[in-house]
Length: 312
Image (cartoon, rainbow, N blue to C red):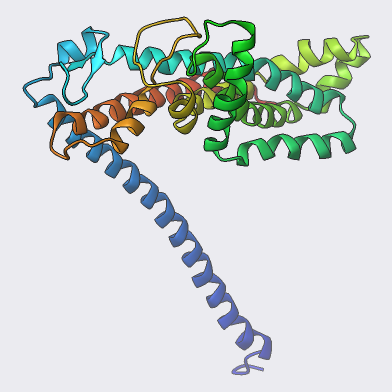
């Protein structure tokens, strides 16, 4: 009859209104989280830019020396030199050793977990590998210092108490779960129809894994390697404990070296003035590290867009 409102509609209207406000609240929280992330990034850029500008405004520093020389020694009581490339060389030496250790082991393990392992074995091995990512990095540092370095000395007396090889191996173990987990996810995302087609054409499991599935997952695998490389470049405690504190341009993994993060730890724990060039040099090195990490991230995104395969 006209003028009579159904009982259900009276109860339904407030419920719909509550659901509407609930969705708006969730959307607002998501937008707030995104804006907060952008704010933090901009704040970091502002701090790095401001303090780095203070560093280059010092009389002892010049852009030509910073980017054109290889000697680094900003310590108190010594002739100061600010050639960043010795720290960059040490950083890439350790990261290169880490990738040589982690990439082959990680990719082989990922292929095994994705294509060969029994589900029960996978359920045990994958969590066990991911536990490595939860171990504090200072533990890896002492592991490299007290176990890896003495083991290397048994092979050659040319290894010192601090060396790039022990630090690189420890960092490689650290990033191994990143490469394994992300690569295994990329391999599992390849459609089963590609595997079935290869098997139907007479391909073996090995041929299917490395000639069909692996190339199809190359975009995700490359992104995993780039992410692991950025993680290796930014590692701090392992290199601070095991690599040493002697910045030099060298490719000999037996040498004691210093990375950018290792130098920042040394300066942060040292007796330096908050207004001296030594203090501001930490921010200049941090800015260089930020730029390098950003370049790796952008390169990884380009690789992912360039080689992305879309399956219907």
